Length: 397
Length: 213
Image (cartoon, rainbow over all chains, first blue to last red; front, side, top):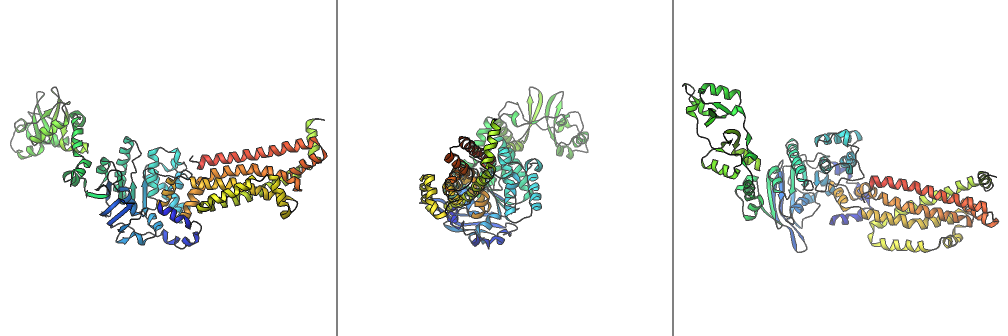
């Protein structure tokens, strides 16, 4: 905000800025190799917004900045496009200090998405997306093509949405347009400040999923601020945890979960909460539905069993005799004794079984004790599902 | 004689078609000048916040001078004719337009100017692409007030040989022709109402398109 008022005195000397106009349209960087924050400090009065921050961002990764409010995450993000100027330290992009660059030009070289989106209400969707390209001197046709491409990209049919005004769109649709606008100039770097923060939880999940897909396609470097740890774990390649203006830890989600540097990190990634959460879950919530192809008759010989399993595309089956489960058997076990005429009955290994209403936490710890990763879910004497431990974890995260 | 015949006779005798055209000409010039100066002043004081209040207070003082007095004061400078009436209209109309422009520009939600800034719009581009368009409904609201002012003051111009419908009224009063006074008066009022309604429609359209408040 500060430099806004500072600049307003130049309003009536537009000719001064005219000279650098051409320069503003050139691409600063085709790709991001590395962004480095070096000893960044920003103070408001006597309190630190960022204190001595050192952080590197690799080209092509999605780095999450997360922390409680007032932790300095948004301030950090804004030093990248110089919406906030640090008091000391430097931000370098591909070894170029951002303070050596014209801020307007710098900003046009990165996309920016914010929580309240800020689509201009007096412009159509197409005008909103095409605004910066238009100022960059693109011709009409090129802008329209770009707008169509981008709307398509964020799953909004262009013909339906181009001429609408922002208020005619739902929150989720507006946020998609916000993303499209940020990508208008095809910047190699995207800054996202809680882009899904204002959406309701279900919609947020949906957009996160879509964004994950988009992220893979575009291969851009993304710096993403959020306060939602689940979002961070889903989207982030690496996560930087900030607290009280300081960087506490940065690492992949696994590193943070398994090696938190302190209590605070542990409580943010909150593995505890997951387990608490798991207490309330029942086996039936996380099991996969049992299908007949997982069932094999005890009297079958090993070779036939392999054929059958290959045909039905399964690696593990459960052996049944007269409707009673005898155990499980893996394709691998059968392969070993292929030559002999041996019945599957003899090869079956014991299997754990649980009831649908057993708690997942109990089932998982029981499975872990016996080193099993698969178990059967039985309703009275009927198989109804399969519990796969890896899958359970995936569903939880 | 039917009513229509009476009206037609008064209309012809007083050359009211010509007077109406004259009237609208003066009115258009006055309004156009008011808009140019008013918007200019509004944008200027927006960029110089320190003098904004002083300028608005000065314009307020002008506003308090009775219109007839203002026209008479302008007489020695601008002579008889359309000049004093147009000048007085403009002086009155600057305030509502400038004030609304200023308020409109200042009132644009910071959210939008912040985004504009962050997208890489220069301060000038932010002014022309975001601030001015978004304050248009308020500017037009000011113009609408100015329009009514202008209509009234231009009519007074008849007193100083300004021409227009004011002249018809003036003659009517001098010669005590009740018909002429009535018809010219109603017609002038009707014109003002029509123009105001027209401006109202434009304002509403702009609100729908640009309005956020």
